[in-house]
Length: 364
Ligand code: PMP
Image (cartoon, rainbow, N blue to C red):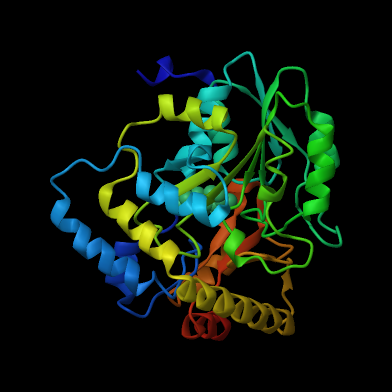
């Protein structure tokens, strides 16, 4: 029956789920440092945990299919109308849904060579044609392996319906500044959706990098996706959202699964959003720890890419599998990026100080 599948799926690798954590826990016990999945070591806001516990009692009911309370809270925070927000079962679902709703086999979808892994998957699932644009070179001063916005704009064709950008990007950690995005938006025709994936937005502190949202009023073809999985530490709950023109949201609302965000997740996300102090401490911790770990790795001779995220990409300049195995034997999990074609690099999430220290102690 597999032969009946859309031929585009044959060329795809399935999403790499990383290591089998339950098996690792059995092997290493509590002494495991899981630095492979870009999770937030500080965990969610205590207020989110409390709200979710209270919400459990209503588990027999269907969730609010509109997600109205969370949408309103997000709309107020972002100063947009409620009708400009869509919620998803993680931002992953929204990235998929965008391709499903706006592209078909007659269309192409443009993304960068080392852009987020879901971009080619969403393209194939819609049966659309992928246009994979070469990344900036390894030796680039500010964004090695990053998005080449000039080349991406030049790759937009008459049949292009979507351009996927991630800012900052996973797995490279690299970013482009708001002004570069403004120039890009000016070059792209208005009938092409420009999707800016801002999954790591809350970790950003570089000058010149704010959010694509500041351009939303001028560019109705702009879509910004965000998530509660990273800085809000609700990865296991699966809540993402996007901001787009109301007419784009209306299309997504017609096609999405009616109860795509569950009741406990809605309650948790709303409470997490309200806890600004927790988010501020997550940001501060990640910024300090990222700088510290980066320096410590550099002092040991490792080439670390610039990052505005909660992970670092290390360019080993040689096959990463030996490096990964060495750390794995010591209970430290990192993620080689060979699935992206970045076979000589490894991605390391910012863990707790104890986990980061374990990584440093275990380095070959
Ligand atoms: N975008 C990027 C760039 C990511 O790294 C991730 C998580 N790996 C996602 C989107 C999807 O996150 P979620 O579905 O948990 O919101």
